[in-house]
Length: 93
Image (cartoon, rainbow, N blue to C red; front, side, top):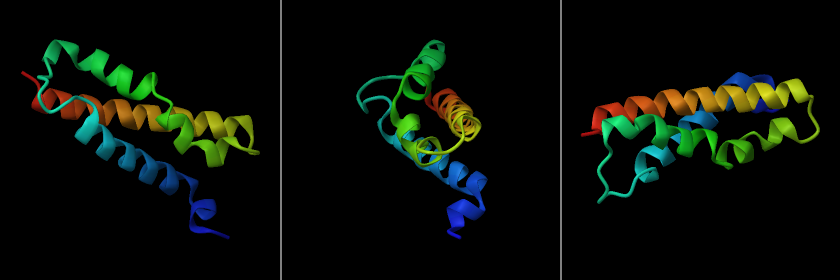
């Protein structure tokens, strides 16, 4: 049994953490200012309207139960939104 099969939660959290690193470094161009009033829009665009989460959940969605797929998608979106919101509010003007 592979580690990710033994611990799907750990794999999901690791994938979410990887996504947050990508978001924190590329969600907004360096020259652009993040306005605090735009944090929800920025995070929705980065987390909800992105296909990155779908790609990260592909192992759970390809051939697994629909419940496992939905669980992965929901968990990653929530992790992404929380991390993005924290990052945005700490770095916005």
